[in-house]
Image 1 (cartoon, rainbow, N blue to C red):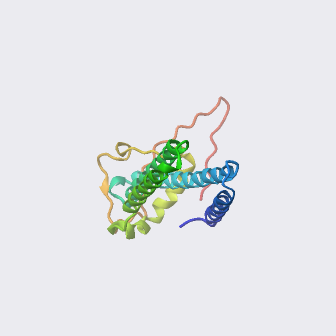
Image 2 (cartoon, one colour; image 1 turned 120 degrees about the horizontal axis):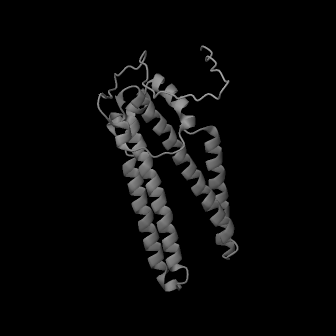
Image 3 (spheres, rainbow, N blue to C red; image 1 turned 120 degrees about the vertical axis):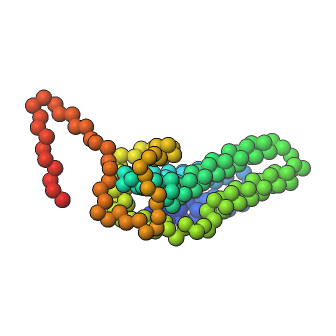
Length: 212
């Protein structure tokens, strides 16, 4: 589910975009294009930010599951990660095609306007079908809520250290991993985190960490 702030931001951007489009259709001038382009860029920024935020969270969950000795590639979390990767690709494809179509027909006369509309509608149809197919209802959708609380808490601890959203399959794959199943219980299991190297300056002493 979306955070309340995300809903407010998305609603505001869409409302301002609608107002900018209405102004452009009323004035039909080059100057009226500026607010519309600005709002399109704001909407694109909001979408890209949301996609990247979801990918970071999902990457943290994959690393947490890997730390518990579970094969992340067998989990619904990895399926959802691939969904958002495809969403990012469709978003980039939409931006590229949108810019290319508008650039190709900017200096053309009205006789080619039908071709502009045809290409634009086909582009939107292909993107919509691609996103709809990617996020179609699937049997594992109900399992998204079954990620153990222990893994979720560990993912929250790992999240601040994650600065990228890309993760390769070979980074979270290997021997001695067990396949995920809905009945898998992580309560009481200890994650296998990599050892941390602490470098002390001469004269410094390591202070013990306070207990929970």
